[in-house]
Amino acid sequence: MPLTVHQFPCLSDNYGFLVRDEATGLTACIDTPEAGAVLRELESLGWDLDLILNTHWHPDHAGGNADIKAITGCTIVGPKEVTRIAPLDRELVEGDTVQLGETAFRVLDTGGHTLGHITYFDAADRIAFVGDTLFALGCGRLFEGTPEQMWASLQKIAALPDDTTVYCAHEYTASNARFALSVDDSKALKDRAAQIFAARDRGEWTVPTTIGLEKATNPFLRAPQLAERMGASGQPDARAFAAVREAKDAFKG
Image (cartoon, rainbow, N blue to C red):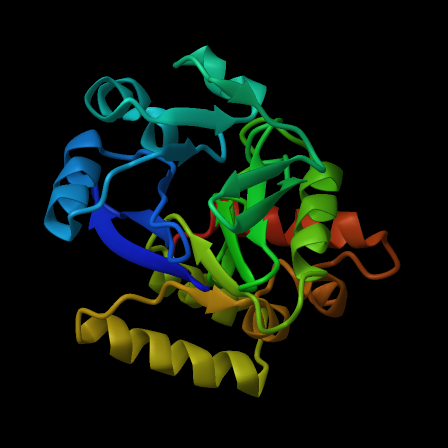
């Protein structure tokens, strides 16, 4: 039976995700950006929380762990770095599997935004929760990792099936689209950006996305194709990625 994903906004631009294994009714929360919002959504749905899956340690992803666990008694799993701000019941590394009833989440090491960042991939349903590694038309800032590490992580995510549904943690897409248009003039990007701007004008979400759509239009995944434009022609792919990331960090549009 499939995995049900319930998405909801929280904080200023985060998304929260509650996921329910329909075969067993077991429920997990992907990160805990805002404890009150998570608990309200659980009550509204009538779901009991069994598990928290953290992607990384930042407070807008793990800051609600303690309060939610105190009320629900759930189990918390995630990368070791989360213990910088909250205890874990189980530390996860690349290749581990987390079971939620009959749903199996494979753990991918996708460091770069933070050193220990991980992604959860449900292969049966082709769903990935990528935290702040990959965004719709963007990627996370390199707060701790290197361009080489982040490029390797993005390639790992890009290797998932094209029809994988990707849940990223922030509504940054319109801003990302404005930057993308400054470095890439492909028709696919222009068409997508127009759709994004229209959707945001209507107050609609732009998350989730798909692997195939990001590979076709995301400038961070398309860095090798943009290398000459970014002044990184003939350089390794990670260097082309770094040039795109540096341009985004300096972008004021």
